[in-house]
Length: 135
Length: 388
Image (cartoon, rainbow over all chains, first blue to last red; front, side, top):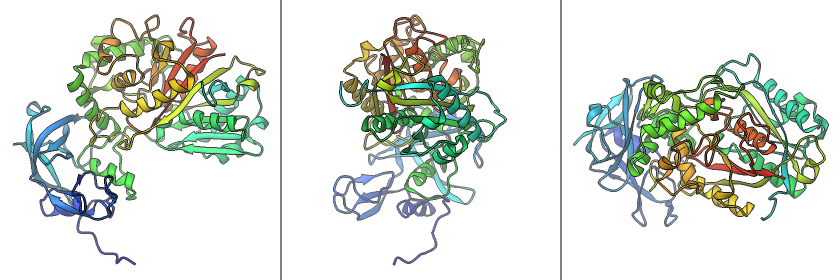
């Protein structure tokens, strides 16, 4: 039987499949899962590789750079822990996978599809997280 | 035509009033709508042998049976994915009736989704199921409402197709025109001008207030039975020509940010393909459509998925009154969920039945076939209903 160990992150709703992602953020690193057998990167995390069905995976550190693939700006309703309006983006990383994160380090008028961005690590309350700023 | 097509039908529809505060329990709403649907069909509670709904309904099939004093049940099913599954109970009921395991199936949605809770609030799940862990991956970043998720996807649609908020306004004006003549609609007597749309506040850019469905209290029930039996009942049957669910391996509920095409079209196309094959019909055979409008701009990729226009061309298709009553393809003739009420898509099924009967307040002349869809951007569902 697997030993129950205390989680090394503060994400309230994470599973065994997601813990490495939040643990990476505690270390200010953006980690993405890769299949240990066929090497495919995959995000969001899954417990099995959909290409080769391997259950063995590792976490690979991303450079944290990419471009905005899409974005929205949340105005309403208020989000606890965030200042309104809160811009959010889908960022295509240079390694080829997409990450959803806040763009609240950017001015609203500099946010557009295709704009190059880089990760910035921060805490929102207790949670270690990241957002993207203009590269 | 294959399988159950045209062999099963909707024989009755019932609704409560739609409001912002029903003043009674969701179970009472469910029971009232069911009785109204039975009365409409000319059936009684003792005829019921099945119930079918979809998740996010808080009224269990068996509690509803007990409340109504129904007899033995031989079929009860509940499909997943909330409003994406709005047409799925009718699909399930059609399968059950066609298979001979049930004769009279009540499909229902009853909710106090305004006075008791609101789907538009930030989502905060705690139990780390795979589904909830995926949602939290986004809520942790401040992408925390269904509207913001769809806004992320539709921004990309705008980028790829050239659609603009002017096109969103066209959709809103059409829906509110239809709602303005529907006495059951929240916006009865209140059409919307393009200028009023543009002046409305931004909720999740690029979406404005009038892109959003009306959070509502209310209930809708429909009765599914065999076409043969429906012909002997009180109403003209609405034949189920097609009924289907659809998803792709990369479909998630509203958080489809990681696949090639992030906006809500591909799973809708899976449903559309099945419906046309089941019915032996094509898009040009449809005289109207009820397209699920949780977030009204998402209607555009649905129109493309159903083949009413080519991919990326919905912005042209909706122009010049084409989707209004009297146009080439009137859509959401009840005012949609942005105009009538948001009963999680089941009020759209009821409207399609009225169109088939010829009794809608905004009746499409000469209607033979109508499409109804479940919510896009997730594992979805749809129907083609038609005249006997």
